[in-house]
Length: 355
Image (cartoon, rainbow, N blue to C red; front, side, top):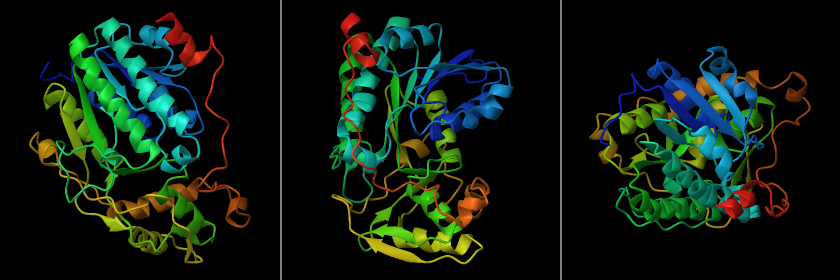
């Protein structure tokens, strides 16, 4: 399959559709695929929110199933008759993966494997897998999709493992699974553990912005709207089993981001405070997007251009009390979570036992 007619597609499944990226994908596909019904599958972990789907649910074209992608029976049922799957579910925060790496491994790697098994059962024509540019690690300048994956943290390793599983499963089932590797995605609805919304909410309540190390580490960014247009380009014009980097041009240091936030937030704020660095908190190179641009895609938004809109959105969701009594932004590094084990016969392991 080399292309997909989005205008005529009838049934789409979005995993993680109540989360930040997934909910934006749902909204975008509702507009781009006017004939489509969208099924959302979401486990409703801490990063999901029903409010993210408010507008989508009011269209009458979206149905919701709660459960995780590790449940083979559930996923096989959800995928019945699907023409496109967008796999946006999974763990996405480096700090949480450092604290509880087993959660990232189960969700991102094993969960993806189970989803692909269900896709093969239902003979779904196409899946778009949302991976991450973190799989390159601290690569050289402008890595292309052919660069080696050199993950240097547990989250990146779990995403790289998922991609390796895709490579092993595709030929066994003759599947078309195309991979997006976005850099740091920004937008509304993002959990406040991530850098930009965390900075914006800290600034909105007059607290200093906490910066790891010296703040000179550089990151590339991507607006979620541009990720959505990239997804549609890859679905409709991409190569079978193709892999595509997704990024806006250039990169910014963490201190650059902090300055943008301080400029965008109207009230007086307390500046920046430096904290100890985390392991492997290094500069991430901007990535080459030549393959995606060859499909006619271009990034339209920039971090600076989005900042004022984001500042207003994140400020508006804070209660008046929280602006004087700071309680809403969680610590960047969570405390030790319970190990991600499940009793035999439940969730992921039940699916694996039956399989």
